[in-house]
Image 1 (cartoon, helix red, strand yellow):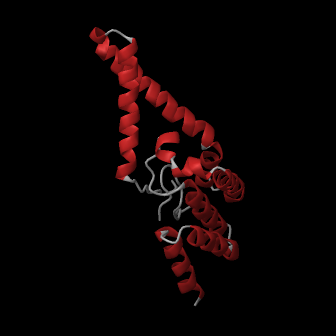
Image 2 (image 1 turned 90 degrees about the horizontal axis):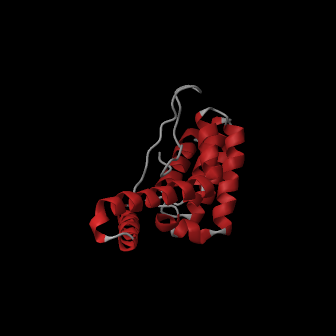
Length: 177
C-alpha cells in the first residue's frame, strides 16, 4: 500500500523494523514545481546583474528549497509527527496526529488541492486521503478492526478512486469471511 509523499502505510514485520512506504507521484504536478524554481532564478537574475547568472541560479534555487522545506515543515507538522510515531510503533499517538492533519486539510481543502504549489508536493494522493489511510493502518496495528474499516470506508467515500482504501477493505472482508 502507499500513502504518497512521506507517508507510512504498510505492514511492519516487527515493531522495530523499518516501516515500508511507497510513494505515488503525479508527474504533471512536477511542472508547477519546475516553474516555481525557474521563476525564482529569473526573479533573482533580474535583481542581480545578468553577468551574475550563476549566482542567480544558486540563490534562486536556495529560495525555492527554503520555501519548499519550510512550507512542508510548518503545514505538514502533524502529518509528519504521525509518520514518525507510527514508524516507532506508537500507533495510538500517531492516530491523534493523523486526525489533526485530516482536520486541518478538511478545514483548508485548497491547500491540499494546490499542494504542488503551496507545499511543493507532487504526491498523487491528497493529504486528507493519506491521513485517513494512515489512521486506518494504525487502528489495524492496535487491533481495532472496526475503526480501521470505518477509516478506510471514509477514505473510499471521500475518494472513490482510492486504490489503497478499496484494496484494504477487500482484504479485511476476505479475512472476515
